[in-house]
Length: 191
Image 1 (cartoon, rainbow, N blue to C red):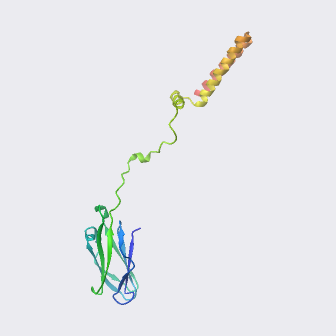
Image 2 (spheres, rainbow, N blue to C red; image 1 turned 90 degrees about the vertical axis):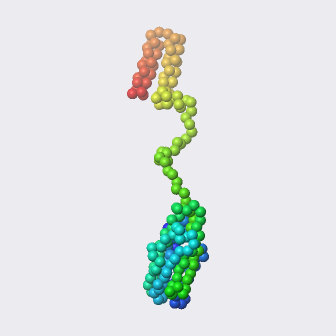
Image 3 (cartoon, one colour; image 1 turned 120 degrees about the horizontal axis):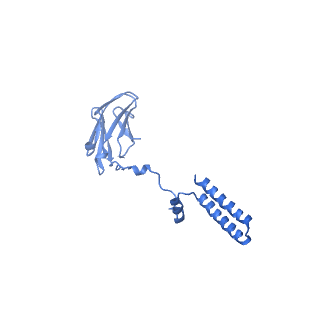
């Protein structure tokens, strides 16, 4: 929202001008509001000092209706400056018999920010993967699949040790069933 400066016209007496603004300091264009209190008035506006270089008014003469408001846009080209510019906005009425000057300090507009495509990419979250996690990722297997393989190899080892200790065809058949079960489980998990 642009700043707004109100000047009261004919408030206390005919051709009087009043404002509550001391100095206006801004980076943006602003609006001068001419508010009439009573009779209509012709108001003249001008820019003084360095402010003339970067500020513009649509016209210099304005008519304020009785008990009405007239909006005067004051355009500032603050992107064209790199240091503050000072000047005055002068408001006159009664054919120049009454005048009011408002000091204005125009500060440079903030520098433009360059935005590149990398801002559209989501930020990496979480810590870097460990050596084990990178190894798992390299095999292309899920951690659950590797856990089944480890458990299956452990079962085959126990079965082989039992078959060697007990001996006989039943122990050999038991180890064969464990190996076939491991192979089926691996097939189902990888396909």
